[in-house]
Image (cartoon, rainbow, N blue to C red; front, side, top):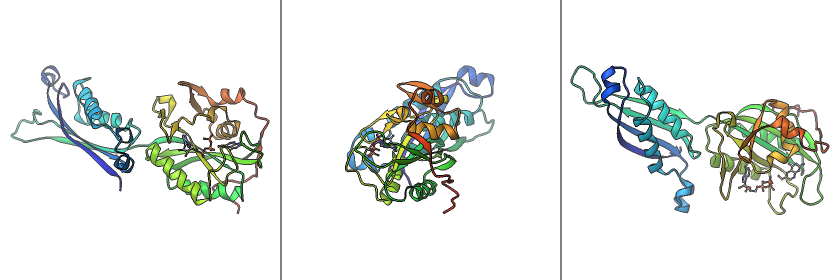
Length: 294
Ligand SMILES: Nc1ncnc2c1ncn2[C@@H]1O[C@H](COP(=O)(O)OP(=O)(O)OP(=O)(O)O)[C@@H](O)[C@H]1O
Ligand SMILES: Nc1nc2c(c(=O)[nH]1)N=C(CO)CN2
């Protein structure tokens, strides 16, 4: 069960309603927001950067109440929920909009609508392995990813020459796309657990590994909903993905129209690949990582 931040009774004057005088004169709207956020990091770090700043959320809510006039409080609640979900750490949100002065025509104390929204972010995950039984490892890891994301597509396996690091065996690489309700930091923690379960150790930078799972992109740059961040533990989009043929070539195979944000600009992955040396990327074993045969 996720932790929650509850912000209740945010009140402002807005002009939402179906009737003319509601749009003209306005009235008070009151909003409650419940955010599902993993509070373990902030609980131990005591650092505001590890959680959601509720004062900022309150500011967003007031701006939406005071902003564009809508007919329905359902629409206001939905817009508030969407806005709250743009915060990377929020995995789900419940929004209640109260309209205590609504023209109901009878004595009443309050009318409210409640909406619940869960994050459904597009994600791109790159897999790599060059130690042990790499095909089996990639297969197991792909199946285990189901615990974190709903998989949309799994690329073919490619065999790739090592890029950077010490002298080491060739890699098998693949890319998985999907959607998740997890916040980026929770997803990364899940990826690390899968890596660890496959005996991943970190001794040498870019050294050989049983399993590497990189979060390439989170969200959709086409709609400007992709998360761009640079914390001590997570950089999004992955800072080296745009120059890695071993990531972009398999990604392009399953998503020909894929785009990646590079230095703030949204670039077609096909164009990025066209500018790279892809000679170190070859077809790998002909297996479907989800289906087998094993
Ligand atoms: N987008 C990201 N995806 C995965 N790890 C990330 C990302 N951004 C930052 N990191 C951090 O990078 C750290 C090192 O990751 P890892 O050991 O897998 O690096 P690497 O695979 O050797 O190199 P590279 O990061 O160039 O792929 C991780 O502990 C993780 O916290
Ligand atoms: N070919 C190939 N080279 C790499 C890879 C990889 O997955 N494939 N991963 C690295 C660090 O993540 C460093 N170099």
